[in-house]
Amino acid sequence: MEKLSTRQRIMQEALTLFAENGFEAVSVAQIASAVGIKAPSLYKHFESKQHIFDEILLEMQSRYEQKAASLQMNGMEATKDIAVFSGLDEQQLVEMGKNLFDYFLHDTFASKFRRMLTIEQYHSRDLSALYTKQYLDEPLSYQSLVFGLMIQAGLLEPEDPMLLALHFYAPLFLLLTSCDCHPEREEKAFQMVEQHIRQFSRLHGKKEL
Amino acid sequence: MEKLSTRQRIMQEALTLFAENGFEAVSVAQIASAVGIKAPSLYKHFESKQHIFDEILLEMQSRYEQKAASLQMNGMEATKDIAVFSGLDEQQLVEMGKNLFDYFLHDTFASKFRRMLTIEQYHSRDLSALYTKQYLDEPLSYQSLVFGLMIQAGLLEPEDPMLLALHFYAPLFLLLTSCDCHPEREEKAFQMVEQHIRQFSRLHGKKEL
DNA sequence: GTCTATAAGAAGATAGAC
DNA sequence: GTCTATCTTCTTATAGAC
Image (cartoon, rainbow over all chains, first blue to last red; front, side):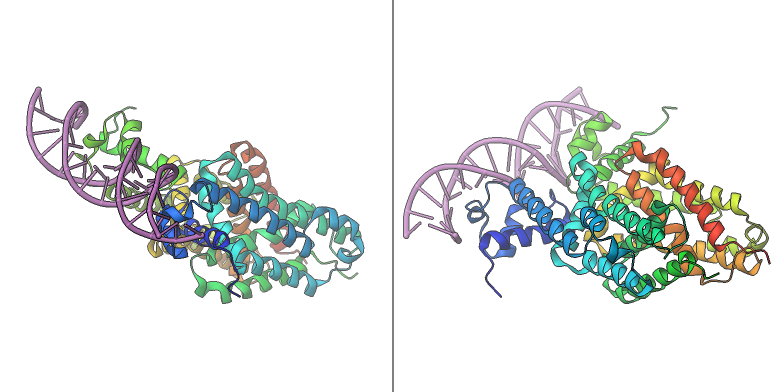
C-alpha cells in the first residue's frame, strides 16, 4: 500500500495543495513539508515547481483517457458499440449518471485535478481549453451521441440530442459543484441525481401509443 | 465618466486581477501599477491587501442585493407578488432566463466577482459558503418558488418544484461556465439558453385536454 | 537522496520627504 | 496622496557536505 515513490508522493501532495490554494499560492516548502522532506530535496525529483504542475497535467491526461475508455465515454468506442447504447433503459441511464458523478466527485486524483483546473483555468488559455474540453464539451458530446443512438433505437422521443445532453449533464455538473466544498451535501446530491435522471427518462422516454 | 475615486479604482483593478489569478497570486505592486500609482501609495487607501479583498466582498454583497431586488429574485418579494409570477408565460420565462444569464455573464462587477469566488472558494469555508449561496442555492430556491406558484396557477404540470428549478437553472450555470474564458461562445450559448427554456416550457407546460 | 547554508529576488508593509 | 528608500520575511532555486 505504501509503495509510492517520493516522486509520486510529491505529485500527490502538490495536487492536494494546488487544488485547495492554487498553484501560485503554494510554496515548494509546503509541498516538501507535506511529503516529509525539505524543499531542496524536492529539486532532486523535479527541476522546478512548474515542472511538478506540468507532470500532474500529463499524469491526469493519461488517467482520464483510461477512465473514459472504462466508462465507455470515448466517442470512438460508442459508435462501435451501438448495440450497447441502443439498448439502454432507465435503470442503466441512472447507473451511467451515477458512475459519472461518483467518478468526478470521489476519484481522489480526478476530483482534486478538477478543482485545480477550476482555479487555474482563468489565467491560461491552454488550461481553460483543457477544463472546457474535459468537463463540458466531451461529456456533452458523448451524451449527445448516446442519446442520438437511443432515439434511433426508439427508446427516446425525437429531440435535438445536444439539448438532451445539456438537460442530462448540466444538473450533474451543478450538483458536483455544490458538493465540492460541502461533503455533507453528497447524500442529498446523489438522491437528486437519481430523481433528476428518472424525471429525464419520464419526460423523454418513448411514449406508448 | 472618470469620476471614480482612487479607492474605487483600486478595488476595480484588484478585482480584475483577483478574478484572473486569484488573491495570493496578485501582488500589491501589480494592483497599484494597474491603477497608475506605486505600491506604498495604495496603503493610504487600504490598510492591507486583505482589506481590499474584504471591501470587494462587502461591495458585492450590496450590489447583489440590489440586483436581486431588481430582478425580482428576492424570495420575500416573490411571495408578495404572486400575481406577477403566476402569470408568467413561455416568453417571460425566456426573458427571465436570459436576464439572469446576461447579468451573471456581462455585469462587469458581478462577472469578475463570480470568477474570483470560483477561484477562492476552495480555501475558505466562508467563501465556499458564499459561492454556494449566491450561485447555487439562492437561484435554485428562487426558481423553485416561482415554479411552485406557476403550478398552483395551472401554468405547469404538477412536479417537484426543486427538480424543475434544477432542470431550468443547471443548464444556465453550465453555459455560463463554458463562456467564462471563451467569449466567442457567448452567441451560441445565448441560443442554447433560449432553446433550452423553450424545451423546458414544452416539457412542463400545462397540457391542454 | 537527504540535509544545511545560502544566494538572489520578490513579497507585504512602514517611514518619512514632498 | 504621492513618492523613494527601506525593513523583514518569504520565495524559488543552487551548492556542497554526508
